[in-house]
Length: 185
Image (cartoon, rainbow, N blue to C red; front, side):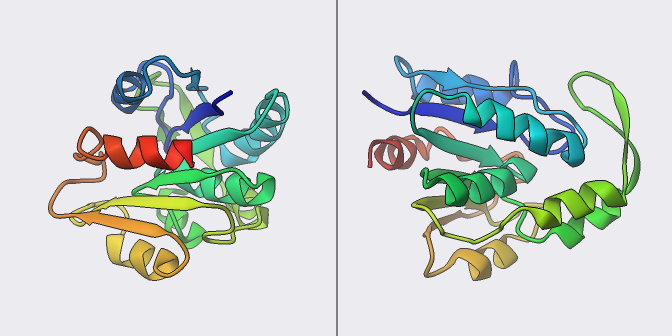
């Protein structure tokens, strides 16, 4: 039995109905792919993930984008599950720039990111490459520093850096063979 694929979306985004989820559904056609909508506030998302991932009947492959990549790295390491990180957050301090009122890009819901959210993220055990990890980066990510991710994961994970692109990650279709191989390992 092949492991379930779980896509963890980024900050103020959504799993269900997102462009990445649609591409992943096409790449992993015939496989079970779960795309939960995580709570916007990390302090709420972490207990949600504890429960959601704890209820899975077997191992999974975690695919996370941006903040979801941070979650995938933390939970992949904790549970021993493979992780694929797409333009991942590697330093919680970067989230300081988002403190205050925010709006979810998909739902329009407003929420306040506060220190408790940053504390919750910092309390997760972040051990880069603690489980088999594939890191996919667009060099021109305008939100998160691709070089920082390279220095965090080089030697601990398989790292692929694509020229150009953006934080949206323009190379998901091109990365399909890597994703499939990583999910099969």
